[in-house]
Image (tube, rainbow, N blue to C red; front, top):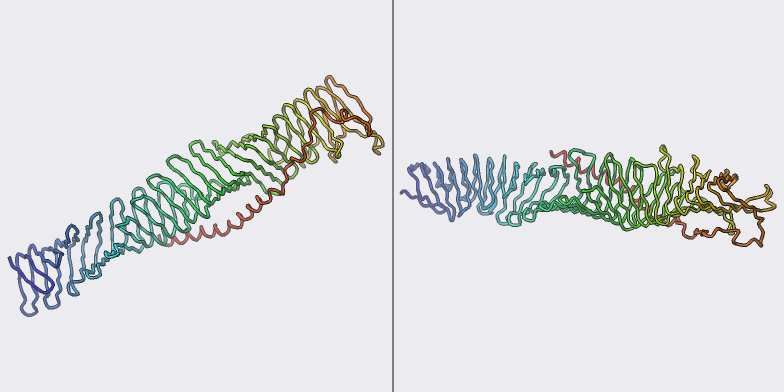
Length: 546
């Protein structure tokens, strides 16, 4: 076996050796094997320039260090055997890493590698395609750039540049990130990918877009994706666009496997129905398409013409087919409708396919100077004007009270009371049915010189109100009995009040107590313009790199 020794390189074997005596160039052919320190170099042919200590190898090139190796068609070694250039179908193998490229430059002294053109980096299940990759073996850090693509499990990730840390099994991607999943695409400018824990961390603004419905997306500032568990944790500036609705929150958790999630500081705006949902905490259940809101949930519409507000302890919404839904509110502390109707109850029920809201559990309502109570109350709306009242119906133990002054009240009780409203949302007619008892204060003439009380009972009673919202006509039929009692200071209280009379004006909800709700909505609207501009900017920055 022929051997050649020099200061830096040791020739272990070659089938044929030829030497050029003029410039000390050595030609080696067949099973060429060099050894340099701990490195072993193999190739089919090589040219060694002894003068400048430079080596060029051809065919089946392999550079080995223990279990690690680089293979290529050609190798060029220069700079006193410190710089290696591999070209032609180059492949690098280091433990769980495989790297292929058109060219690999390796600086032996700096322990630094650069792969150029058609670079493919493989690590376990991760595959990276790029045109430029640098590997710092001292820091054990990989850097890549020039519009790269990562394939990992079912994800495809585009980015302009990024870092990979093999020991930590961690990737940091920067600029122009586009993560494509089965059902969604994420646009971002920074993310951390922890392969061992199988989680992705977004620490800057990002947008998740539904693939089949680009108008549905999630905007956020910070988030964690747990890939194995299929759970998502969003934090800061969360904004969800879904089917013409916007949902905002401070903290949003979603479990894709269980189809469950919750959100804090919940706010929903429905563009089509023109209302807001606000609460401190909300739970989603996508198995039965339900939403449960807690911590002072509210439903608000702030339109000047069609306004309403519901303030309760718990709010449940079940979505149905064709965008229909069923709503339940528990412990309704206040209900406001068009500035004219206020009320409260234990349970509120509403189905979007119906034209009424049902109130159960000690419901009580006030409109202008009037109060109604019963076991159940129904409010019916005009079809063309969703939040304008057409009529109101009180069932069982129905009681109607109209305040005249601090001492005088018109009162009617019966089984069922129905009230009918005009187009200005003002009560104009009342119909009472079953076991009726009433006390109505009357004026004998326009000068009101003498007051009378109409105390009656019957099977059906109709009351008509004038433009000043006062009773001006009374019709009592079916087993009717009526008596007129002169009103004076000596009139006994038994003549002035029915036995179940209870004027509860002190319980009447005050709208100014809900002022902070409108401040929340105003703040949300101001934030909208900033976030919409940020979303456009993120997507624009990403698409220009693709």
